[in-house]
Amino acid sequence: MAEHLTVGRVAELAGVTVRTLHHYDEIGLLQPSARTAAGHRAYSATDVERLREVLTYRRLGFGLREIAELIGDPAADAVARLCRLRALLLEQRERAAAMVTAIDRELEERAMGIRTTPEEQLKVFGARLYDTIGSAYPATRRTEPRIAARIWEALGDARTVLNVGAGTGSYEPADREVTAVEPSAVMRAQRPADAAPCVAAAAERLPFPDRSFDAAMAVSTVHHWPDPAAGLREMRRVARRVVVLTYDADDTGWRRRFWLTRDYLPEFADLLAGWPSLADLTRTIGGRAEPVLIPWDCVDGFFEAHWRRPEAYLQEPVRRAVSVWTRVGPRAEQRAVSTLHEDLACGRWAERNRDIMALDTAELGLRLLVA
Ligand SMILES: C[S@@+](CC[C@H](N)C(=O)[O-])C[C@H]1O[C@@H](n2cnc3c(N)ncnc32)[C@H](O)[C@@H]1O
Figure 1: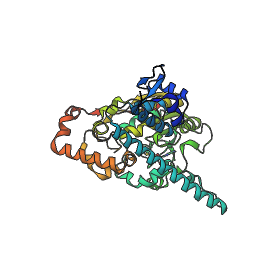
Figure 2 (figure 1 turned 90 degrees about the vertical axis):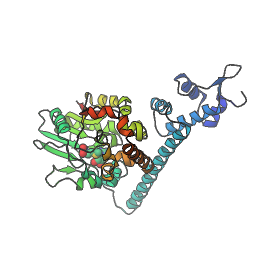
Figure 3 (figure 1 turned 30 degrees about the horizontal axis):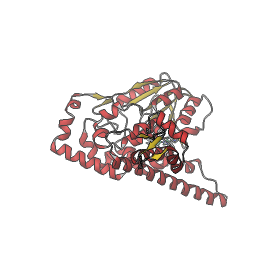
Figure 4 (figure 1 turned 180 degrees about the vertical axis):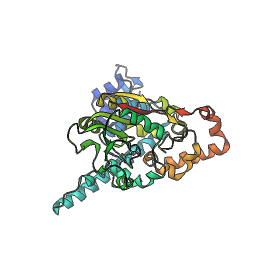
């Protein structure tokens, strides 16, 4: 028992209450491996390591259920888990540093009597990423007609449509009166000359009166919003109907089915942990979720689009047009790409994925929410 710490000592060292540790034990998140002769909880070095992981994820804002899933991953050893935590902490530090810089700049400007525009205030959030990677977007991102048909059908008889997080406007229906909203200047600048008018704003604060559109749509964008629930409530406020194309972040089934995340880029799970759950999104708009299958020859180059064309992921322009590759960081990207390259060359990929080559469509977590 000498190498074990008592619950009180662990609580004191970690700066949490004994009650918190009891709760973690009760929900199975952190069960101490021993008890003292008097029946009190006793924590081994391994238990303490696990607690450190739990507390770090807590500080990063993860919920207890998400943490249980993250640290319960039997495939990840201690070093892999520490690397994942480290990457998340670095990302958080980078974001915090960018926010401090932006606030310093705004303070200086205010001192000089200059007011920042809404666009400048948002730069540090979602738009910052797209102002960095957005110029690579049009190379492979375009309208996939079979997915567009589903979205347009869901819009029903709506005549006026608001497209939130519109990007370059890939899914805007040509036969309706569309108004686009897009916070990134880089993305707005790449909209075709004849595209619908576009307003510089973010989903969380739509500059329109209540019920001013028949429908509001959002395609592949909700997971980029700093506050998805607020954005969806805004869509609900300004439109009678809401149509959202997004991903099911709750279901791990499809993640295991997609060979790219399963065999090459497990770091994708870290990104998903920060995404809003499908259940929450659906509840917020009060609608239903329908699966959207991805055709094998999908022409919109989003992350999963090349599920039956693995060689595509070796191409830099294909990856640069998808935020996932930037978000996982260059180390994970390089490792995934070089391993995939080797597996394609030696036939290992083909051997492992023989069954998917016979499929015409794949269920990889894409969902259409309609309310
Ligand atoms: C993957 S792109 C999708 C663009 C377009 N909807 C499409 O399907 O091609 C995501 C877009 O969401 C935008 N975005 C990021 N944060 C946002 C926010 N808070 N509100 C609205 N849009 C946002 C980005 O600037 C980017 O243009």
